[in-house]
Image (cartoon, rainbow, N blue to C red; front, side, top):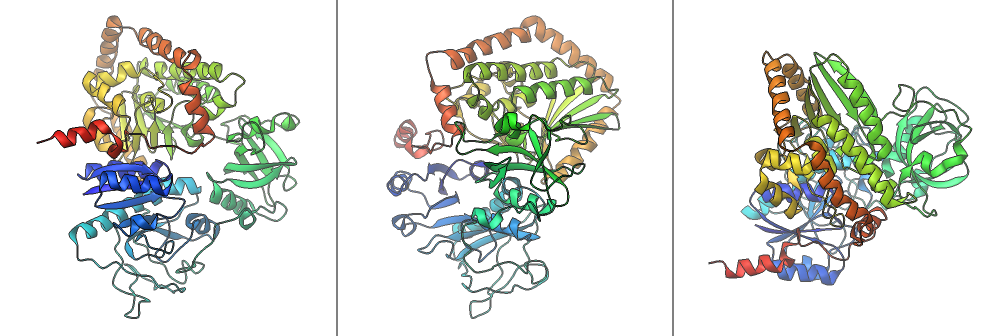
Length: 613
């Protein structure tokens, strides 16, 4: 089918649907929801069979939803309505939640249901749940809805506008002849561990407002009462607002938005007071312990975007005790473990952004891991992101963004070069979560790249103001994908799923439908690799191959050539990178959709279609 994705932004869910639907043979184009006239024009240009809206902040114009079927992806169970579905699910502590695909009508979230998929909740931020459980459920539900639409003959179901107690048990709820409970709601198959058919019952989900409109969550609905709120309550409230809009609170008398919260089990103090710092984080005492806050946002500062907490609060933290970052007692972004001849280096940087200091700290941890008596070293990244390259927020907040960009790219290149130059061990980049830009090519510096099946890669730089990129991509991408495919990949500027990444050589293997399955399989494969009888031969071949390639063209030459182009991006006459970074960091709304994804606006593509036999 010809499917138009209408979305507020090209977020992780939209990218995943773009990749999966295109891989399934559908013709996909994307339009950002800028205004009604633009949406109407996109529909007229593309003439889609249907429209799918994975992420909207306002209603689809009536002129569009009356003209063609429009499927809304709502991150709530059937009957749930309102703009803060996932926020409320976290705040109310629902053990299960789901995604519903419904047809757009006059009333928001009240259209007939075409498909649903459910999942078990876990203790995590809203962003993490959205990128993982919500995304997997949404993909299943969208495919089920589109399959029913394409086959025809399916009557979507209307959910009662009144609270309905749904039955216990396996399977799906059914509505009665009166419309309260009808034929089974469709659940997607193959959801994997932690993604199971949604069964909402009085016991497990007794707080659910099924069938009712839930208003947008206000700051007052999740405000922290530091004197009485436990650590668990504080974490739940912050996580319900992380990453947008953030939870508004006061630290050291300063009004800020809180993000990136983690338990600080070894600390206590007067509730509401800052008690320690560790790396980028500050610890705030709760009624029964303390919480690490890794990032803050001061909307009234010259830099009104997320930054490390210690960067925002600055000198006000000078008298607090400092606990070493990444220690057992401190705020931990990097950790290391070993099993069966394999070492596993974990690094979870907020939103996958790796600033200069983070890169230097990770490079130090990498060198320490190399010194261990292991034979395989696995770079695990974090559960939500492996890496997205440079930290654009820190660059934007620097006294000289150009200088900080140069420092940041130098630090990440140092790490990439260390991985490429590793002898005596096999290296593996195991991507549990997505990766973008320099993060993709930092991963490709390893001997093997293993992907979780649902991972989406963005192996390009140019959308950030025509940035050239580094991390030795001019060496590693042609080496593994071939020169023609390397050029095509960079030119297309499109997200890439795990199937395509393996097919072109950007990755070596894909497996594990869920993060848990993937992590277990990574561990088993790494240990088997370390114990393989041909390991010594593999290491000898690796060393001889690298020596031969170095003789043809040294890594230092690739780095020099890439950085000469990057220097122009940072310091040259063309300000495109600085403008794009400014807009990205400050979330300036897009004025148009890039033609790389808005295929209906690509005049060259339209001309090819018209001239085709």
